[in-house]
Image (tube, rainbow, N blue to C red; front, side):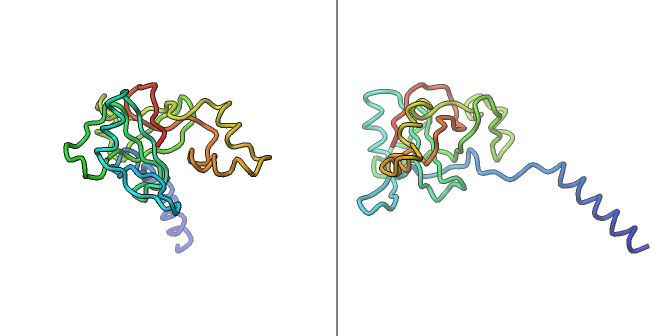
Length: 168
């Protein structure tokens, strides 16, 4: 009887686990950051972002945000910015994805809204350039590769469809 009960409980857990959505922090708010002189990240201000936006509508991608599981914080060109130039600039958590893959948010309601739905799109340089920057056979490229999140793929989960990148 105990073996049968254990088997039923085990099967029930498998069924429940199969129906559960994997936890994610994609699309959760985060602070944009950049490396300081000592290499530690620090928060970018809204004023810094607004200054760059005066020149072009840009997407921002930053690496090292402790607000995000993958340490990647994105702010697309259409993201509604704040008005206080001294406030920390906000974005949303992102992560590397494969071209054409689905990017599901932590909140399904966001996925249904055209303004907040994520899609997998390029935010960095093209793959050929990233391969040169992150050449595993050249130790000198390690610093370059770290500056682009140690990835050779340009695709990240992001809102919108801008072709510009500020590359902070």
